[in-house]
Image 1 (cartoon, rainbow, N blue to C red):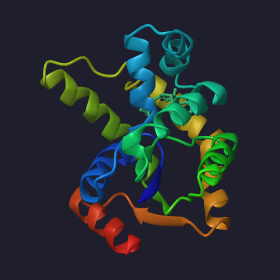
Image 2 (image 1 turned 90 degrees about the horizontal axis):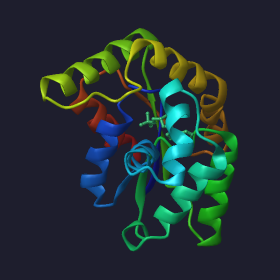
Image 3 (image 1 turned 60 degrees about the vertical axis):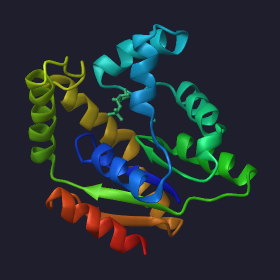
Image 4 (image 1 turned 180 degrees about the vertical axis):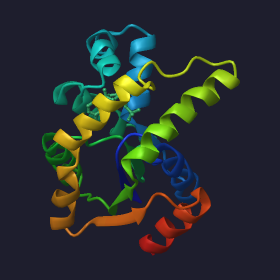
Length: 192
Ligand code: AMP
């Protein structure tokens, strides 16, 4: 199973991606998580990414493609993966196709989660509050101001991927506003 989760921030890519990862026993690969880990470890990638993430922009294609290439070459990703937050641009999507082609693989499907914009702001605020309730630090980009920019980045660079994958015949669009278990069930049904 080789899946891409597509959808704006707060659509549920992480939550659903995790469930699909358990269901199909393949790793969930989140470029957001990889970049946050790099920021925390203050690696060169992290240093280059930090300000961009905090501003709600997109980290450069070269950096992100490099991270994904390295991660996909690891043993556990050989049997499959759930990509969450990648690709986010046409160049990243083309690089992913190339990478998969070179190992004679292709994407099984691209799962697009459709959610109204007002709900996204609510969900991200809720995620920040839940982190605080757990005594954890919320993500530095889970605030209304950065969220608006993240939505703008999505509209500007990522939304076109919906058409890109539709044209490839791989797009599976799912109503992401239903109950979380129902969304999982809808995805699984669409994949079979
Ligand atoms: P996420 O956890 O997927 O919401 O990602 C958090 C932030 O990391 C995004 O707002 C971007 O700044 C950066 N990021 C994650 N994935 C990518 C990507 N594929 N391309 C560019 N930037 C990314």
